[in-house]
Amino acid sequence: MEEMQFGTTDSMAHTLKLLEHIQDNPDITQADLAARVGIAIGTANWYLKRLTAKGFVKVKQLQRRRLRYIITPQGIAERSRLAVSYLEVSMRLYRETRAEAQRLLAHARASGYDSVHLEGQSDLIDICRLTCLEQGVTVQERNPDGHLPEFRVDGTTLSLISPENTSDHRD
Image (cartoon, rainbow, N blue to C red; front, top):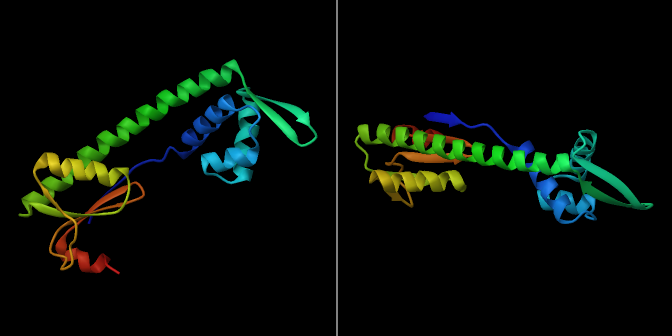
């Protein structure tokens, strides 16, 4: 089995989303922020404290338990910087995934295969599917007998499992 592991950008994405939501709605609650970003309330609180300490967000108390979050000019600049960085990281991930898929497809073709099976659900599997189409490799939706090489995407790990190894990795 051959694999490639990509880095994660969760912190950058969470910070960017928090700044976007705060800019869109300064009266948003921590619970709403957490739900919209997909993180725990405690994690949202931690991010907000960090953003406040860095001067990206100011907190104004409206009522005893109500806060208003105001994005500062530095916060707007940070949001722009994060958006550009996130795009750069995403494009690098796309290019690296395509290059790795091409390399793994070349390996499968050199082993005599012109069809593969894709396993997994993600944007990365879609990149693999497009790379197969571009390379003229047929994607088989099912592989019941395990005779085809299998692309797997698990999180951000892309791997090609040869048919002789497939039985070792099946449930």
